[in-house]
Image 1 (tube, protein in one colour):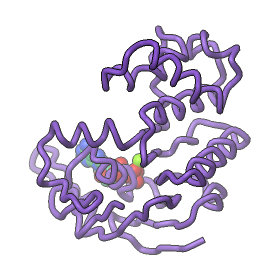
Image 2 (image 1 turned 30 degrees about the horizontal axis):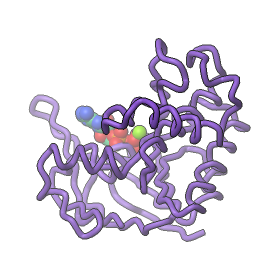
Image 3 (image 1 turned 120 degrees about the vertical axis):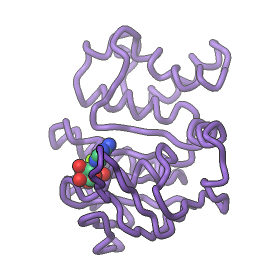
Image 4 (image 1 turned 180 degrees about the vertical axis):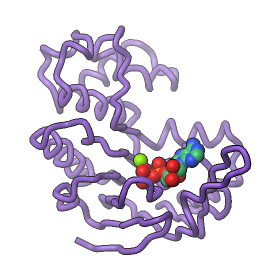
Length: 224
Ligand code: ADP
Ligand code: MG
């Protein structure tokens, strides 16, 4: 589904260059749950951002369903992202002045979905993960684990084919972390493609494949 071919990512700070990815070649199969692991600074975030079309490589190509992303304008790339991908982050970044429901509706507003439909869809996805009593609360009135499940519902709002999560359990206790991994496994069972960066090796048991990075290169691929 996604192919990465000899991808380099070089950050420039003044005159200094930091090569965060150094010739990464890999592919993500449709419907698989892929974990990316590796020490801090090994390039995990750089790679997942490129896989999710949030960033472009310095060198090399990313191919999404046979389309080379270098051929797409920034607008087309944003459209691909909004329609096909859902993102979950370590810093949960819900908007605190909006209710839980309104947070889940936001990505649908971006696509111009009418209010009634937005509300119905938000209730439908949230109901999978949270009790109705949380829907009209503000994010800070619910627990961290509940907030991350709201963020997963938000990522699902536009019914994406690919879910990308960068250390989504980094701020959670182990019970909530397991729950998040279980949810991703369920989403994979319904045919979605899951890409998750994690430090928590226990969670890699939920994945189909684990890619290990070190110093911007893939050093190991393990099939589960
Ligand atoms: P990880 O997610 O595995 O910790 P990152 O992809 O965030 O790794 O970073 C890989 C390397 O690139 C690190 O050395 C980091 O300091 C550097 N880096 C990441 N983002 C930037 C940036 N915006 N500017 C400069 N260097 C960066
Ligand atoms: Mg990172």
